[in-house]
Every structure is written in structure tokens, then in C-alpha cells.
Image 1 (spheres, rainbow, N blue to C red):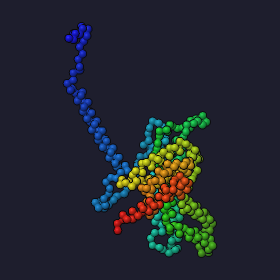
Image 2: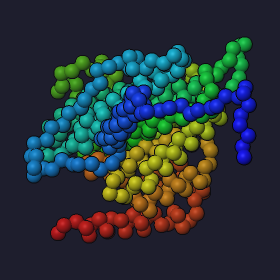
Image 3: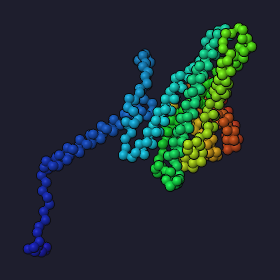
Image 4: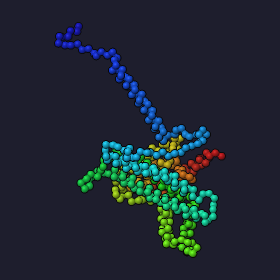
Length: 400
């Protein structure tokens, strides 16, 4: 038998709840918040599907014979979008955002303006030789614009690497001041390297387009001979001979910069250690290699699959980044080279544009023959056989 409580001890009672208004309000708010989260999740998923690299509903020519192509432009400035409480962070994001926009603009300009002009030069009916040389004279004007474009691309590549080197600076003190802007040990910017790879891919494509157009290779020497013959036939032409030497220098410069197949090679062989040291930055070296691996891991599983979009073009950019990394740091990364090399098993040939195709294995060995020492003989010999088999399969799949 439980003894009764003493006089100084009070009974404890639970709080009485009759399902009042407070609980009803809480439950109502909880349901509203749950519905909001579900709706917001669906909206985010739709945005992700629309902007992601997945196959969605495509345009059907039979149902919609008219197609509208447009290029939207953002009306908001970059400076208006970037607002954080950290001033240093604002500056860093602004710089890299502007560089990414510049890369995107240069890629679009190359694909819309220069590549079609190079690919279609000399196409159509064959006119008289005099008319053909007139076409080449008009083509020189485009080459001058392209020269300015290539110079701008080279400047952007140098600027990107110097900005990255300034960001990924080892901790140290110079002249009593800390040379490190912020701790970047866990900061990774793959979008920067992705845009840089796209820009380098355009330079590679320009080289391949010039190499594939036989008309340019045939008509350019003939055009130079005409310029030389003008000096020997002053009576037949009424021009100012004092301007010919300057014009000849322009032709020599254009040939060396554009027509010798070294647009990409000249870009990666620039002097990068000007305002900031790039080639002797160990942090940037490690981060650069890490981003190449990450970009390859992102695209490699989708190559050859039904949901592949621009993975092959991204692969060209990755090969370009790998060559740039090797040119800067001379690091023999055998594992990374093998990972890039083995992509030939899925994609032995990459279509660039027009009638221009590109093979990564030939490209890597042409740029740096010492890569062959890092690979075994079987890997070198299997590439050509895989390429032939791939072409035969594609040819057999064509409709008769």
C-alpha cells in the first residue's frame, strides 16, 4: 500500500489540452510549409532539367516546320549580380565571371564568323584564275580580323591563368605584407577551366579548318607570287609601290600566325610569368590537374550514350587543357594521360565542324612526342585499329 503524500507535497497534474487554436494554427502552418517545399522542389527540378545536359523533348520538324533560333542576352550587369559582405570575394567573383563571359563571347564569334568563312572558302563554281585571286585578296581582310581575334584569345588565356595564380598563391609574406588573398584550400572553380577549355578548343578547330581546306593551301602561294610580280611590272599596275613592303610583312605575319597550323601551339607557348608567376606555383599546378581529372570524370561516362550532347567537344577542350598543363609545369602524369588516351575506345574520332574531324591520340603525340614514352606499345597500336573499326561500323550503318 502506497503511503499518502505528506502535507507539504503537492500533486502534479499534466497540462490539459483540448485541441485548441494554438495546435490548429501550428498544424495549418506546417501543412502550408510542406506544400511550399514540394512545389519549390518541383520548380527546381524543372529548372534543372531545362538547363542540364539531358535529353528533353526535341523539336519535331513534321509538327513544327518553322524553327526560331535566337540568342538571349542578359540585361543585368555582372556588377549588379555579385553582392556579398566580403569585398575581396566580390572582386574575385567579378573578375572570373567577366573572364567566363569573355570566353563565351569569343567562342560564339569563332563559331559564327570565322569557321564558316574558312570552311567554305573556294567552294562553288571554279572561276577564272584572276577572279580566284580576287577572292584571296578579299580573304586577307578576314585573316586580319582573325589575327586580332587570335591575339585577343591569347590575352584572355594569359589573364585567366594569372588570375588563378594570384588566387591560388602559397602562404607567404613579401615586403611585410601577406601575399595570400584568402584561404583557397577547399575552393574549386571547374567552371573557369570549362570555359578555358572551350576557348582552347576553338583555337584547335581553327588549325584543323585551315589544314583541311586545300583551296587555301593552293591559292595562298599563288597570291604571294602575284604580289612579288607586281614589283617587276610597275608599268602595268598603277599602285603606290612604297606600300608594298608593309603589305608583304603583313602577309608573312598572317601566314606564320594563322596558316602554319600553330594557332593553338603559339597560345600555350606564350610567356605567362609576367605580372604574376604561373609556372612555379605548386598550388595552381595541383588545382589545375585536379580540375582536368574532374572534367574528364564528368563527361567520360556519357560518351557514346544516348544522352550525350556536347561531351565530345568538351573532351577536345580537356585534351587542350592537358597540353597546356604539361607546357606550363612539365609534369609526367602517366595515370592522367592514360585516362585521356583510353577515351579512344569509346570515341576514336571527334567531329568538329563542316568536314573536319579530329583524333585525340594523334593530337597529343603531334604536340608532345614524349607522351609515347609514357604509354605501352599495345595502347599505341590499338588506336588505329579501333579507328578503322569505328569508321567501318559507321559506314555500314548508313542507309543505302
